[in-house]
Length: 209
Image (cartoon, rainbow, N blue to C red):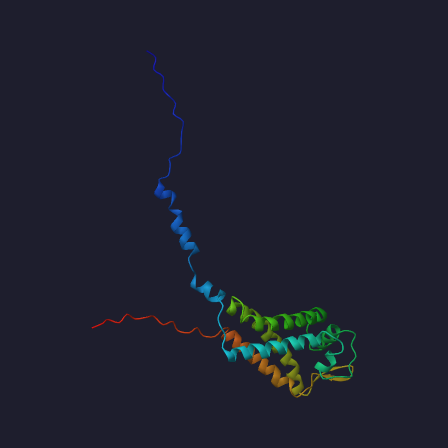
């Protein structure tokens, strides 16, 4: 009698219920809290003293940025009321070109926008999530901005002020101390971008004797 071999279709080995669910612990571990990430993304309540540092420095940066943007306020800001400029950005570009900064028009517009936006960011970051991250992202460029501004102050101390159209620029007695104070404030916020967290009190059970 002729014997025929039945062909059994191939099917991949089925996974057990345990192996099908083995990805779940890995997913849970992936979605678990990351202490370092949470440290930078959490909102940290500020103290009254730090509110003042943020508010004063942020308002000054915003005010200086806005005054640089207009032709009728830039001469007052730089201490040369008789200076005539077409626009504030163009006049500020002439100033920074005198200290050797490349691309003066582009950098002038960037500095104005940076002072206004990041000054506002210093104030608002106290009420936003990621307090530490936003504070450092705002304070770092503003600290570099103050270091460049101090170059003008150093030239004044050396008796070589920046001169545009016969006017000594930024030759005010209050400018150098103010710029040093703003730089110190930015360095402080870089060092400690948020207030220290209050220690958590763990209740200790008391045994009744």
